[in-house]
Length: 137
Image (cartoon, rainbow, N blue to C red):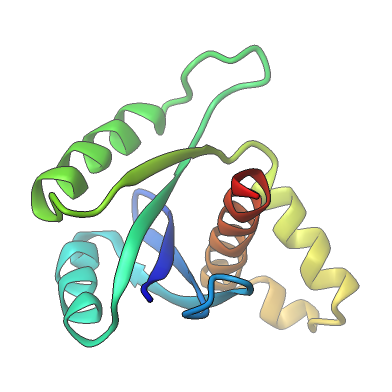
């Protein structure tokens, strides 16, 4: 049984989350420099069984593209080419950053730790993955 891996793509950093092998719980995995993302994914997938990639898809409230949308579409194409046996699903990621901030506050994370952008990226990836898991049920 493989895991599901979620990606919250950013221009500088990318947040990653994965499920447990039974695909019940989404947990934060890592924040990596976006330029190193493919190398990280190849290394991770050599160690762990992954059966699907879930990629956060940014849209505005009026459903128009954001400035990040073309980068995500390019990453989707790259992932499909690099990992042709894995399905790649796009998941609406509106509000994930604000929800991640709120989750950190409600979880009691110290202000100093909430300022670390990588923490927001990882938690956003968890929220994207959790959203996909709930919609797949």
